[in-house]
Length: 64
Image (cartoon, rainbow, N blue to C red):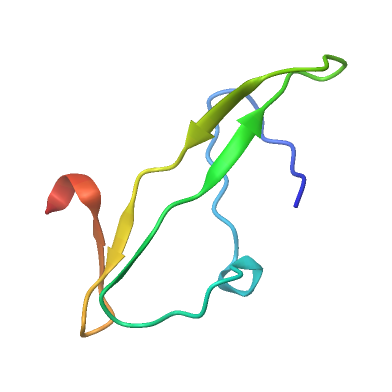
């Protein structure tokens, strides 16, 4: 999926955009390439890791 995100903004994809099935006690992380418009190369970035607990509640990696 290709998206445009304004500088210093956050984009959260809707659940239906995820290619993995949501299961309890699973961790999710997104990887994307940040490329300036009109350039041929950019930087790879990773999102914070989100852990889905057995009861379905989310827990960010830095909250563990």
